[in-house]
Length: 236
Image 1: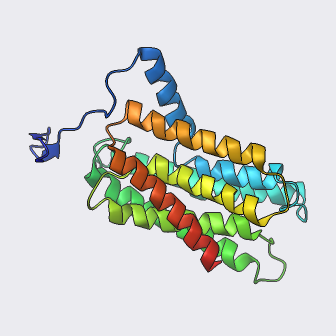
Image 2: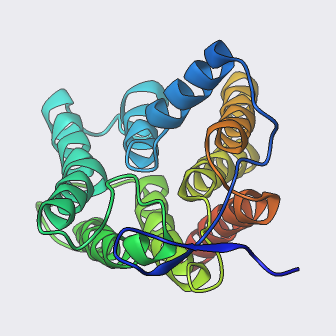
Image 3: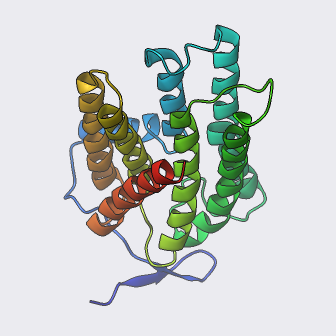
């Protein structure tokens, strides 16, 4: 089937896309948009680091409160602050049309830039355990950083063919990390795994409601997130 096209303000051809679901009530759209912002891809890795540092019962017990705060601050800078600033700068310099990255073209430079930030924190955390007097970073945190880096580049490759859902990639990484911890650690992860699965379902449903993503783009994003986390756990 041919995809309908239209010309944008710069006289370039763009796909005409519409939400997968039929029009929904305003309140439901508001809730879906709130969920999309709350679990935005730049926030999900930070949430996971906070969980590992302050909620998990023993991963960070060897570190004091200040060192936990340092690690969370590093995550906030590399996973959240720098990607947000990058997108805002690109918009200010007119390299992208919207900070919401509605088109595949708009996503190219931000994905490359985020890949750089994610590589940097992965490199630091990976080598931190090899250096004397450095912070001992738990392997789960290193795997999370590595998975986020891998996912950003897999998303860039997928972006050639489709506008892959970055939200579903993020929650795919998250839920897979919870599953791996539930399998490998002698802890009761039932409530946290249930919460992760619920969040994953809510985020994917929200993207169907308030975005123009297709099923292939949302479920493909989940697959990329899952694969990235599995690769990271195998590598490190």
